[in-house]
Image 1 (cartoon, rainbow, N blue to C red):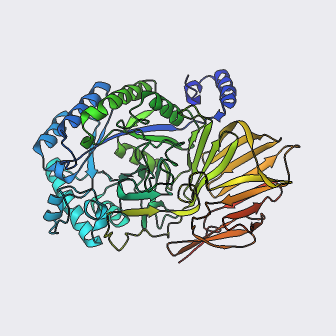
Image 2 (tube, rainbow, N blue to C red; image 1 turned 180 degrees about the horizontal axis):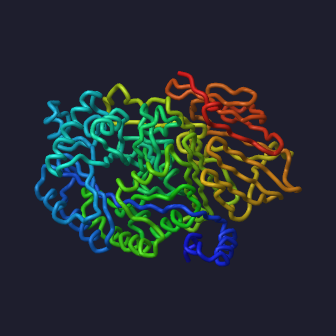
Length: 558
């Protein structure tokens, strides 16, 4: 059953009935756009294995025409050199399709720019060869000049949209300032996968980046690049985060049709669509469907055929908008002057287990609330600061790996060990020291205005706990006559993990990441070390603990 209020908004009585039903399920969903981009990007060579690179494009074109679904095609430089691919696109693209740039770097592009190719193959996925990060800033500009010239030669215009797994700020700034690229996309958060890490960024949806850091949301118009960056691949909001914990790299649990669990599993897709389209998302919900051609049609076909049919049905029911990346970028720029607050709410687990996950993000921070049964923790919290420059702003990456990050307050993946999970947890005093502040039942999640999310849950010992996510503040409050008054928060991490902790004062915690200092204020709540090397205690003040972000509290110093 669909539970979206917009379906009944013309009938007040039905709308009231729906609100009651939503509250029973733990969801109070306001109106908001539900947006899907189908992005298929195209390589011209695949050295890792033998695969037909034209067949997937041809079949994806057929699917788009069959269902009338607008599609974005992002094309790599070497594919621009292949008449079989270019002619197919020109002949078969739908009237509402978009052709844009996929800016991984390949041998003919490098050589056309007058640079020596250092790769093992004509396309080499190592960061220092296959991505712009491996080249000086001036070389990046030459690579983009060569790409745009070839693109215009083939398609008669400059691309409006550009994408890549990782995009550096100098390249994105240059594409916008010189060539008018207005919308971009990059990879989901991941750690070590394929040799690169993007961690702590806007979890989903889209953001305006800082001109100093293409991964970091900007806070001011002066530093903001007006190119919305959409996060790709559609991550499982419950299981993607901890996937691979304790190892050197993460696995993939996304909407990509070649993965199971994930987009190749019809049951998982149904759960993922329901989670994205029927739960509170504040400004809008977003997902990216599609698949790169280098996986080959046999591996993607079953999942992609299933997804296209389901998206078309939802589109026909007017529950979602399926549009190009460029169209979404224009809508975003017309709607938002700065990065909006958004959320991803999963109160059910695709595996049927009692796990829940709620993501909230604004231009100042992101936070993740995670439940395993009656045990909850703040699994992740990162501060956003536009002055935190990326590593590749003025230098290149000489190795096969790359890192993009923001400013961690809690990193439940990198600060954990299996069986010793980092987090910020509610605790109450007991004769044995402290006990976890357990909840019961399903949290109730509701949107307050367009920027705030409120999560309320009954406590097992009586009373209730409320988590309020506002753009510059995150507050935890206990209420009810039977609620405990002797509670607080314990921030812990695995004992052998070194975290970027700088100092602890009476009402704040200071950090230093890559030489960049920042602090987080807790207002009247008192902060203290407990004697344990891996624990900080935050005491409630009048039954509330407030985390304060924004320029006045999350300060920086280089």
